[in-house]
Image (cartoon, rainbow, N blue to C red; front, side, top):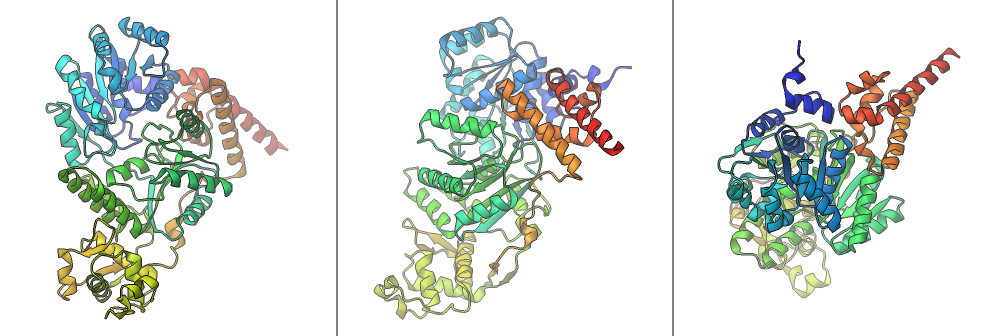
Length: 611
């Protein structure tokens, strides 16, 4: 009797090439649709297996799959990983010498490639389009398709011209893929790429292995250091900062605190950026401190945390950046420190930009959604998923669920804060307003005569941190706005509160977060010292093989596969082959080395027990 994989070529490719026994979520439906020649738009979270949706059809359809990829580092990593699986993959980009490029072009023409990765700029070159016309093509895959949208945070103008694929190759299926796109961005992707006839596949955006936490800024560097040392000592992670200078300063400071940290931003020399990226991808326990110039092309599955020291520009950007943690499905953290000044700075950047009014309007809406997430009084995951059009129950794995905030009737303090904004002229920032409310006669307060206001000293019953939080919540809920100079001003929505017609509930600031809110599994929990020893031996074997192959360790086997070896203790190659992530090529190349590690460990245990 035939096995299911013998009857289903896609399942067979999944098992024997990639080492997985079953498709996840919408993968099977997408693969089937594209195999039959259909166009598709696929929205699937980072780590959800988007690549398989075009890689397997490319292996099974006649010809070569052409993959449009926006970053050189991304395509190089993916091609290297595919070659480890025995897939005939290559890339064409500016890093290749002319002789190397010519060899790959001849391979394409001769039908000797399964997958070819190209940048949009390279693809649009008339020579490249002519080469494609002369070759047998299985499909076109447009990765990171949100780059087509002017509302997207990774906008690439060249993506707009990819409609040429539909115009010149109408019979070849196209699949566009992205992890981040709200409804407006999806509509623009469909319009710009002429995918009106495409079937849309939307998977859950939920990443249940990621714990979301937002803390109020109070010496953010020290907060970051405590977070890393408490939960991720020795782990790989990414820290995002808004400016290049802050990136360099933060990386240097972490190094001074004995944390392995490297800076990354567009202002660094290209060779330095490449070196830092290579060290991060191939190393263990390195923290990359970066601007958003870093990350889109990183396929490292064992990033255990992503931290933000500054507010991102939108929930799409935040979701995309935090999604770089825990791609292997193991517990990971998304941590952000956030203060009122972050909100003011982002507002200023929008208002002072030269963008058209329509673009500014959209950017304000996106920032408002992000502020709503940061100031959420309940489950953060619910807020995040709702933004992408997905309903969710409280997750039990974010700071708001693990330590629900205490709220209080802040109607009177809200009136006092709003009144202070009004009486001082609606032009001052939070620091000055809080000085007035707390009755602090600073030089600026005296110079402006604000120590004579009726609200001077009116709020001494609440601590400064609570007033700062209250002002943030008033902005986040649309009662206060930020002018072009960063000052707070009244908005129409505040009338009801000011007049006492509407109440205002606020979150109470906690002196310190309960331990439950910070508890996250920092590392694998071992049942015994014996299990810990085997885990160390498996990791050392992987490290040795990676050095021999000159590839990142995760390309040998990911942590999730090593965990299965630890749990199941395979004693034969057949048993090893049953583990997730162990395909035919990797079994042949590495199976015996790992099998020897397990067998030797078991023999030592047996001898030790006999003694």
